[in-house]
Length: 167
Ligand SMILES: [Zn+2]
Picture 1 (cartoon, rainbow, N blue to C red):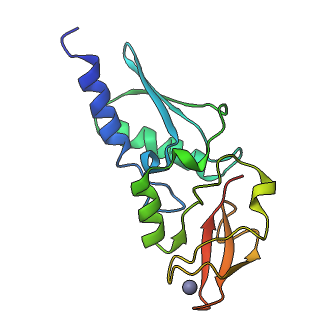
Picture 2: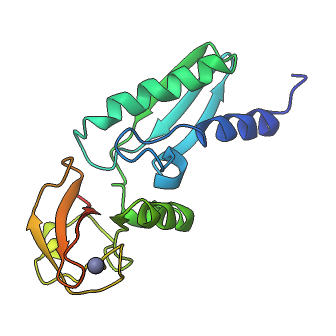
């Protein structure tokens, strides 16, 4: 083998860093931390992803976007594998990703929210307003603009905002 696999893998990761989340276009799939592994099996490239939650409709689009990005960069045999275990947690999201999410006007996941658990998603949970940083917020709807987000409203600046929730 002339080419070192590490160089090839670095190239693959740098391509994956350009693939964005269809729901939150400011975030890349590497910001979200859903890319678990990139394998090269001979001619074939396998990208292993873990959905942010099972059945998220955006995942099909993400898998397609991964294939398209790799095809554009000269890779021909691409396999995208979804691995459901271990379950994706908001901890996998990069600090950069959380910052971008906030700048986009979506409250980043709480650092304390470690596992996908509905009990942690109680109304008492303090969610910070991405606009004025107030913790005086309340949940309006369990579902925001997409099923992956909940709709909140700030009691101080009165602005509604999305909270990126974990399922
Ligand atoms: Zn506010």
